[in-house]
Length: 386
Image (cartoon, rainbow, N blue to C red; front, side, top):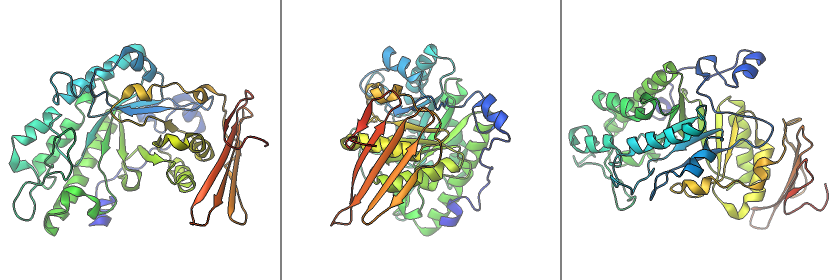
């Protein structure tokens, strides 16, 4: 089942590749057929993304304008969640926010968030599924599967992907914002790398689990193919279970295991995918930023908003965002010593970064780092000498 879920038995499309260096320069994208819908990327300075909903308010003009200059933005399910109609109409609210962003920059890249597990009634589509319990997932005892947690005091039922009708409806409702001409792609959350990781399937029979996984794979392939035909993007979370059709992934909680996350970022970049590295822990923001520079590559983006439901927090213009960077001169160099690893990297502008990982008695590591920016400023806790 796990092998089938990972896409071996499902319809696949090759990952996007640039055929020539000229195409990369002219289109700034991986695949010629996707040009015009691509996130913007530059080595001049850090390339950034945002991923959020605004919950208690509509997206402000100031935040929308800031987002219009980022590499890309994903608008979450909680966009204007508690504004009328409260806890409903997510599709229309996301479309309105996307249009507002594009009013400041028609070339801005905006993705709409959707999910492959819970049929949240915050969406009109979720309300429709709720009216059709015959299309929702049932457990081995014949009861509707219910989410084991609540969000804003709401619990959910799940899509039953074993049913062809569910697959067809899910594909259509996931890209409402795209079909409305407001969004440039779909970010689908909920993919898991093991069947046991799917909360919706825990109490289902093995037969139902197998049918559900197969159906979800089929729906994913159809959605990805439809988006590709429309010259639109297909992003997923998490990275570990990305279907073969994926052109972009999120590295959620980037920096919690910084040494491992650097290697993960390097690997994903080499797979020629868009990579969204989300820094979720501001207590070590400076060292995590150093780690991002050590692992970054073409079409890798940094996001530093902590609250998924507060877009204003993602619109904070930190000093490091305007610092000169330039293309890396080489891959990061890792020097392994007795109980320490020292990683360094240099960029074309003259910016340099170093991070020192020291193993402690608990077999964990402490981190000291510094970024020496080309403008003469520094960021970090270990900047006394280069």
